Length: 152
Image (cartoon, rainbow, N blue to C red):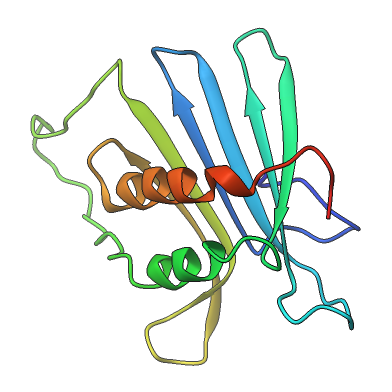
């Protein structure tokens, strides 16, 4: 989806995807840093909505015309990160598997370790009722009026 997509040969700074099992539809969007000298807010957004048939619709937005983006990105920085659970030697019976739920993916090329300067890339996979799912659903709803068929 948009994780590997490029705009003007640039990868997304942040990309998200939602796969909904009951509707067989996926939605993803990427946030690209576009350092244009004439732009105060250098973010371009690309969204791809794909049906089970494989037919996809691409739409666009920019931070110049979508003021909802910056607060959403600021909120993203405050999401709690998961704690790594070491492998167990006993059977895993506390995993909650849902076959009819949604799956959420988040990729970031410019993550940071706490307050330090050390950078990292990051990929999270989550399910319904997770902080990533809540943020993604809220952000998709708030960005809905921003999308259009023409690239800014």
